[in-house]
Image (cartoon, rainbow, N blue to C red; front, side, top):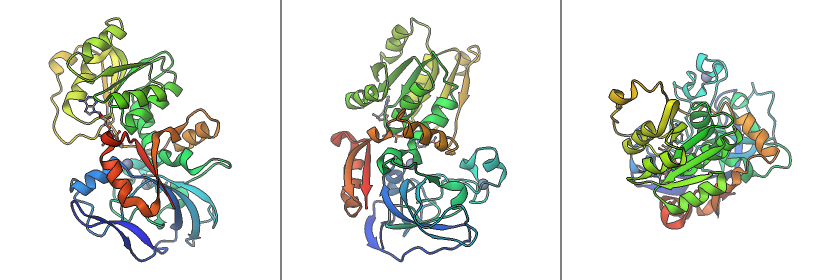
Length: 347
Ligand SMILES: NC(=O)c1ccc[n+]([C@@H]2O[C@H](COP(=O)([O-])OP(=O)(O)OC[C@H]3O[C@@H](n4cnc5c(N)ncnc54)[C@H](O)[C@@H]3O)[C@@H](O)[C@H]2O)c1
Ligand SMILES: [Zn+2]
Ligand SMILES: [Zn+2]
């Protein structure tokens, strides 16, 4: 089969590789019909994720059809259409039972294994471990593109941004960073009942996408962002500030715009230490949350897509045949230039 193979920092190729086979009785093999590329794949290509070794097939988001099942698999069969999420869940360990498959012990303490610790789904076929407790049936009549982004960014924005932030009806929410993850937090924040959603980003184009996803206000990131948000909130600050960039400046902004008693929900992946200004924050009664997505909300999100309450396909801005994945990577890597959010690759 063909697959997108990591060849070490800066190296990727669309190569001929061996077809995957059933390894464990709980595995299934999925024929990948639709997949996408994540910002994390770009980090891997820069050499930022040393656990990913040369020869690894990348990708952790897919929709496809089951073509083979392991001996222990009884609730999935050949021909089933499934969403393969970024996070694998054994369904039995302590973290999985607590709804925190992000830290599944059976797969090594981190649920993100596709395109990381095992071969991923940017390929014609993929081996899917712990399939019965990991994959989701795609509702009848729903297209691949409508559910593809439920593999990673939608549950990330919802679980780590909106749920951790405790967003509820009437809340004023700021989402700092309107990339695919921030936009997912905006979409799901609206569903959770936020009445004002302030999107903050450096790029005007991202702010336009934020409005299309449900932001009620937009603020261009810069020196006066704090003041602009103070104006919008009548000087009060926001109930929930969601950080979806992953740098010290944006985390710091979130701690300055959150109101007394509010929550800062960090979603961004940080690569550098950040100063926490406890000399100002100790008196504010705020909560700070962090987390890696678990995918526990995927069933809920699937229902919201099925019933037309979330249009997740809006986040797909570019389409390619799977065979053109090399070009798709180029377009996604230059997302700003191309006004790209997510690319959709179809076999
Ligand atoms: N916690 C999790 O489980 C999890 C899962 C997936 C991704 N992430 C993280 O979420 C973050 C966002 O992911 P993404 O794919 O949307 O990334 P992205 O790079 O596409 O988007 C980031 C956005 O932030 C904006 N930005 C950059 N600097 C800014 C600044 N100073 N002020 C305001 N906006 C600024 C950019 O213009 C861009 O629109 C990343 O750090 C990623 O690692 C976390
Ligand atoms: Zn991802
Ligand atoms: Zn587990």
